[in-house]
Image (cartoon, rainbow, N blue to C red; front, side):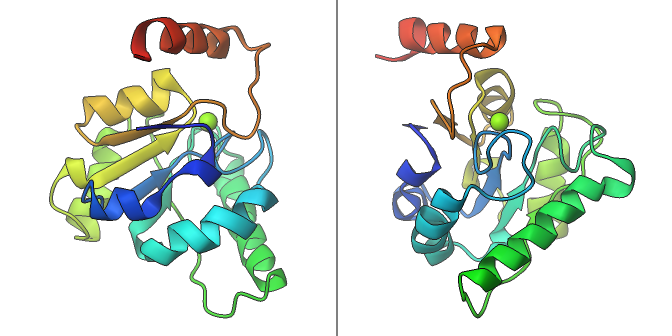
Length: 185
Ligand SMILES: [Mg+2]
């Protein structure tokens, strides 16, 4: 599935039409602005609450990022903890009364190499689904998020622009060219 950004994702369709039970979210340029440790306010106030949380319980949602929760995180996963703290604060500020903490999967191998860690988390540990095809992998990068989603036979959701299209990054530019010329029909 391809969308422009997080606000465009139809979570009802993911659940009802595609049978998706669990949601993996990339952080940078997917739910957050690059290098920030909080959910982009325009998403939090819109599709996060009226889309994602309407159709999915927080237990079925996890952030898998190549910055927070990975080997690139600060000592003792300080950035991941800060992200969780900010989420709490932002939900309180929005006067959302009943909300659960946001899960971040700590992983040793970076995307696209952490497939097993995601499957272990949702299938073995939490027992929330039985098949990789019931997990949506949502992200803005073809070579990490989408590639991993395909490799693990999950359901990739490619966010073509994300929060902000970084055209200065050569790899991102290449992914865009690849997508526009060879993948998009
Ligand atoms: Mg990203």
